[in-house]
Image (cartoon, rainbow over all chains, first blue to last red; front, side):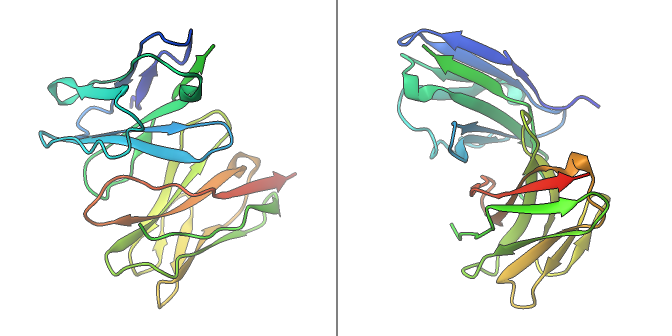
Length: 113
Length: 110
């Protein structure tokens, strides 16, 4: 079946621009997660949505980062006024719920010039 | 969050068993032990998880020490496709976020 789909796969933009990254989770998965992986760094949790509960935003690095999940399905991660340190691979995952395996997409590689 | 300690790298020959260790001496009673792996240019892939008892699935086996302060991921016959970074992660029952460490980079030689 279809896995987690992320778009675009690559994004190059200029410093100061806003970017939107999209994640289509696996159908039926109620939980959705965003992580990022910077060169030379490990995977870092950003934000987590579970059903209709308030999202866990504890990993967002600054108020320039925000995410929405519309209709309990597709999610968009928005980065405003991008900085060079935002360059990373942004990964989305989904799962059936608490303590269930997380299924990851292949990520969006974001490069800030 | 409880921490895990893994060797930075390990090597294996194809078709040999591989034992990937993980230490988690500060594990709490409600922490699950999860293993994920990440192949080059791909997102992480779930491998296996357990709480107290040893677990087997089609990909691997997970051996958990009786005191739960360490665990071992066992790949029964390594293939070239198993070359990846393997992450051992503790996940509390009441949170879903995964805290990744640096993992073990496994090289498999023909």
